[in-house]
Image 1 (cartoon, protein in one colour):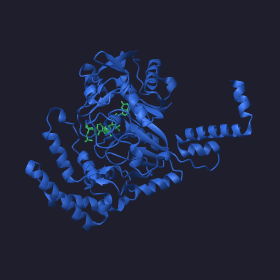
Image 2 (spheres, protein in one colour):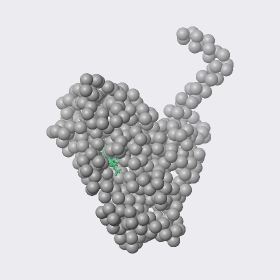
Image 3 (tube, helix red, strand yellow):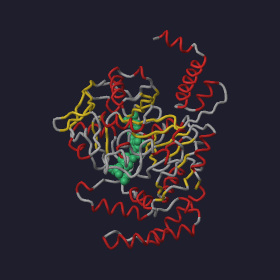
Image 4 (spheres, helix red, strand yellow):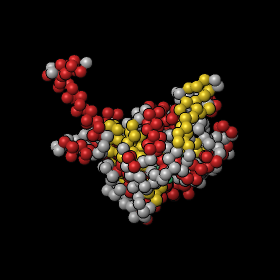
Length: 471
Ligand code: GDP
Ligand code: IMO
Ligand code: MG
């Protein structure tokens, strides 16, 4: 066999083909990392179109904000592509603790342009509050670009969200963040939404605002919806629009231009795969595509530009809000994870539901996202445990399945099948290299990678940006 290969590559056409293959493989490897690495490697001026997408592999709150901040060190632009201020992304930069909702988590690395792209639903009032919070804390927000095609979350969207949630009974409750996300995406699909560009012309914006506000009052108030005080709401929203006008940008153009120039563009996902409107545990999901596919429609970048997908995976599972959660621990072990992991919502403060890692769902998520590298977070939270469990299959009635059920009806009644691994009973919070991890921690991580069929690229052992290492 080996001889045959040698003979084949002695043909010039075939060896040329093999060389091209090797080059492509190398280029892909380099493109997964910042362009500057590529430059120093080849010592020639080559521009590799390098766009990385980072997504949550589970139900959100995996630590995406922290990993984005770490990766931004080598990026030239950071772009949010979906969701809205339902997201709560935490960054600890050695001195301070920040929670970001709409602004990309790259904002704490000065000088990196941060883009809110067209797939995001933007509450103008909340965005201005977040910008003011950052400015007051000494962070420069002048480089923010607000996509002209973004859909705006308007005051009636928040009222509709709260009205639906408060009136939903039993299993109809989703446990939304009540930030108006679902109703804003609903208006987009209904084609009655107001887009960022409409703020550019104050008179046009006011007309549209009043039309839609009146329509809400006519439709919802007779059925018990809270009446919107249109004058007060307009005052608040128009003041925010005045602040945001200079930031409005055709981000489809700027993001593509950056990519063409060889800037390493980092796309920041919000929520997680099981909150994806198509691939999640529908209907207990958010209203956007949280998986990597959403990064293209949410930015206007073509699929071929994406060279690397990072999947952020917490070393155990959490979920906020309603919906199936096969490995949930409604007991002292779950409480331990909640307290040790500080599992309380960064947006709503709600206690997060906690459980063991569910490799069945994560494998499905890595497949749908096409995860190239995993960033495994919160390993340190498991430091004190004697034993750690991983769910490797589900039992439904008398059947054992390893595929992820597409119906919440089935997912609600599965029983997790666990594999138990020994703990390491040593603090990992100061570990900065793979070889310094306790052997059982290495085994746990490698088992996860094997089960979800992905490679490990980063391990995080604490909330601070410094408590991270590449593998
Ligand atoms: P996101 O929504 O995915 O950005 O995650 P959140 O910020 O909502 O929640 C993650 C929480 O875990 C935040 O409080 C982070 O500061 C914290 N965190 C991130 N990585 C680690 C880690 O490796 N260890 C510990 N102990 N905490 C972490
Ligand atoms: P990050 O980006 C965790 C959940 C809500 C609810 C469901 C629908 O911080 O990971 P929505 O308000 O979006 O209509 O609520 O989705 N949810 C999140 N859970 N992390 C998030 O964001 C979430 N964003 C929404 O709790 O169950
Ligand atoms: Mg969060």
